[in-house]
Amino acid sequence: MESAQGQSTHFDVLIVGAGISGVGSAYHLQEQCPEKSYVILEMKDTFGGTWETHKYPGIRSDSDLYTFGYRFKPWVGAPIASAGEILKYMGEVIEENGIDQHIRYGRRITGCRWSSDDNLWTIEATRESDGEKETFTCQFLWMCQGYYDHEHPYTPDWPGMDDYKGLFIHAQVWDPEIDYSGKRVLVIGSGATAATVIPEFAKTAEHVTMLQRSPTYFFCSENRNELADRLREIGIDEPTVHRVVRTQIMYDQDLMTQRCQTEPDVVFEELKELIRHYAGEDFEFEPHFTPKYRPWQQRLAFCPDGDVFQAAAAGKLSVVTDTLDTFTEKGVRTASGEEIEADIIVAATGFNLSVMGEIPFAIDDKPVDWHETVNYRGMMFTGVPNLVWVFGYFRASWTLRVDMLGDFVCNLLNHMDEVGAKRIDVALRPEDEDMEILPWIEEENFNPGYLMRGIDRLPQRGAKPEWRHNQDYWREKEEIPTTDLDAPEFLYDGRSRASTTEALESAG
Image (cartoon, rainbow, N blue to C red; front, side, top):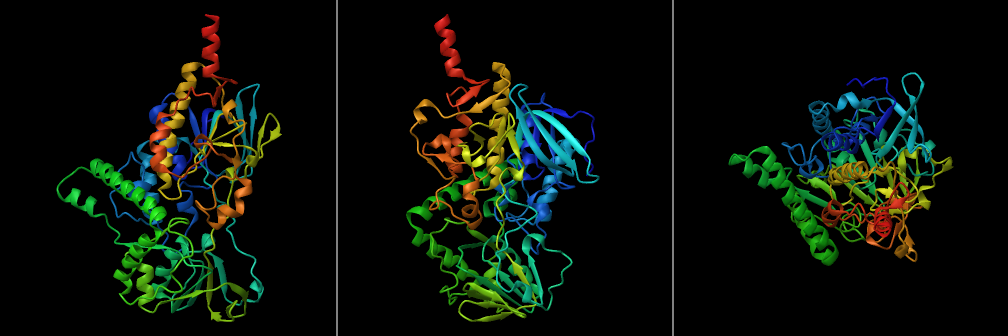
């Protein structure tokens, strides 16, 4: 898809990233603020973000598409979809809504500077095709670039890696040309990526081994939605199917999240029963499938049709729970001394956190240290005007928050126009003076490795609900749409609406 090449470099709104967040945000901006000019700057030469970056075998969603899909475009396929199907869906959204003419591909942003004198952001970018420098200005910056480094995955510095004579590769940089048929494949890791690649490898590899430090929870189910199938069978239109099934899934997810906290042992027994449906009643859970944390303290890996456990039951998959001691010429040796030989070793060890795309930011020539800011509901930041960051949910579909924040940003932009404001800040209120300032998220709430490794680089949270991203969609869906945009934490052109109103009333 060709990017737009217009001459204007000033826009009302600049969106960073043409992934699932950027495309959804652009749709809402067009629909709710049609008079606003905007551009999307995308580093890659096509749209898709995560779904374009990852090319490992079997790449698929680990959230159902009825909630991962946008609320405004019905999803009509199976709940768990391949990357190709998701890209097709996103391409349709772009084409149907004319978003393509607003995207400029191959632009690597190298700096963002805010000027309080001009109430403008200046964005410097480099064109990947020829190295040319470009400058854009905008009144509002909508950060939709995601939260991990697309170019540099997380690979532990294991001893002996140079000794290994086979092929070593991280899943994030997988080359689709690699032939693994008839090969012995070792996958290091046990999260969502491992759960995706293992069943695909198992189809043609000689054997697959999964080496994990600790077990993961898996949710096994058919890759279909019974309610959606029934509604279609009786002739219900797709928009209604999408809305009803989406609501049903979110209700079930909310109930599941609550039960994981109140009765985690019962939930685990139910998860095991689902696994037995695919792996057999005599399937052994100890020691490889008994996690040490409660369900949903880390992401629950979804297995459509129990494919991981079908591979295990068929003898195509072996699991080793141990730490990696060193690489050897033929594979790896674990801490307990077990040798695992492999022709191909795939690191499914996660990614590196990327805060604001690692772009240098400055406010009036002072560099921004994001860890010194306090976040407002995980989207705005003290001391940083006219900016919203889209950061989705861990326990619910990311896109639910894309839609929600799309509404919020558009309401905010329209409100700024109504009150004649050029600048919007969030600031701690007088009653927040003694509020405890804490890390972005509590470790006992959600603690995957990439988040814990980078927690000191993320903005901070406050002890009050307004000053944190609580990861609770079911609470936020009531709170964010009803946000009082004239509340004292919002400063318009340096003053709160409440104080302005009080001053006018006193003068009157």
